[in-house]
Length: 359
Image 1 (tube, rainbow, N blue to C red):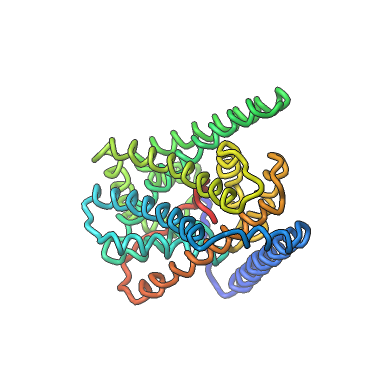
Image 2 (image 1 turned 90 degrees about the vertical axis):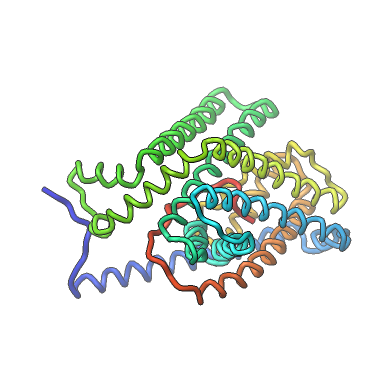
């Protein structure tokens, strides 16, 4: 018996509408819960203590932190531009930078998260064929994810050596990291051979057909060809991008480290800041706009584990929230401009759990 995932007829519109309403309600509840958690953590820590810590920042220190965040986005733009150039596309740096921050604005301000953000940056490059833009984004995010997992693996090793964990927990941590790395290596190898076509063929073998994708098989084949081309044209580029994303985790840790130093008082080591950045990246998995509340709870947990003063830690979180909102606001500008661009047919990117993305 052949299964088909398709719906037709007016009878199925009502259940789909109810499901959509349920999803919307769930996302709103998550958003409200996150906001409530954020307010609770500020009240619990003490608003006066947080404001006192924030008051120690000078204008040049704020400028330095914004400069570090700008450097972060410039490097990410250079990485994506390198993939586009490798695939034969010549797009201005400013246009690519705008697409990058526009995607960030969507992922930060809406429940769409990284999926919505990556989709937006594909659509923002209206001068590039959508399938080719999609291919470069998939390769870009795969390399970023691999680098992120590598930094997490390194953090796990450092965490185990720093703290006395039970042997069973050590084994589980190493096993989880090893499985994730093996899975990602498998996906990279499949990407070189045609990941999406392989997935469709595998579903077909087990008698599952999804008409939406089957009807777009030609576009899927084209996207797979572009992805394979990205890997085969310049193998050294893969290593260069991997090194770049690996270094960005250290840049992210350096920003937190300098924020603590600018605030005075509590000055955790760079090592602790690196642990916070890498192991605290899992907040991005929940579909909460800007990961409000979830981000704070994750970081507060690590502050407690690493014995960092809570008022200083919450001040760092508030500063990073403000910078995140500023950059999201900057990203709205190219996002509005991209709406006027002429659309090109294409596909959506897959979900992206990425350790280096976030506030």
